[in-house]
Image 1 (cartoon, rainbow, N blue to C red):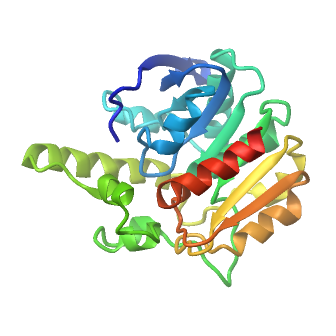
Image 2 (cartoon, rainbow, N blue to C red):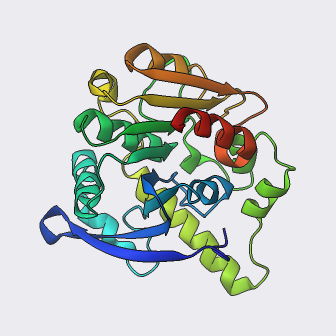
Image 3 (tube, helix red, strand yellow):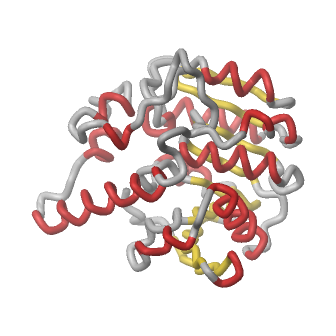
Length: 268
């Protein structure tokens, strides 16, 4: 999404002993907040813009998704490497107990960061996170879904102006091609750590999270069924759970106002 009227600066952080450089987008003013984005990349959507009014929002671009450095993903060997890389990014940015917000794939990463390093976050917000597995409700492999079928799985309110804006492709053929290639590559980069099985032992570590957690899920989530919310709630100690009605997987885009209000109430 556009960054117009929003002042965004970039900072490059080198981690993993010099192997990997992570580009971080930063906007806003106030206490530190780190946003870990979903598998398909991110834009400065209404929720993030809202958060910049109270927080300095830091968004590390997932390795491989920075336009100038697609091969960066090859420097991250496995899930442990990835968790350590993000811990080092937050440390090198000098952020003290930031609010940690993660959406979908980013939610799995945020949860595991908080489990590995309980003293790292001040609070944790998980928006329909990956990370657990139920045989009776398998997570949909979005990388195996035809592109024209994916929006109906990601969103409940397909006709909303915001969702339509997110889905709209550029009319210029070259720009359209570039956008589609970037999105496919982004899904591939995160897919390296998700499929064939998006569970890396997180269930055995969730009890280590000591920061207060807000867990949000869409009742109509067709990617990760809402019953996963009960699985997280049963293990995470200090967990507030909110299930949003008329809402699909990408919560902050499907129900932006309700997401902001719920999050504001938790962070007040």
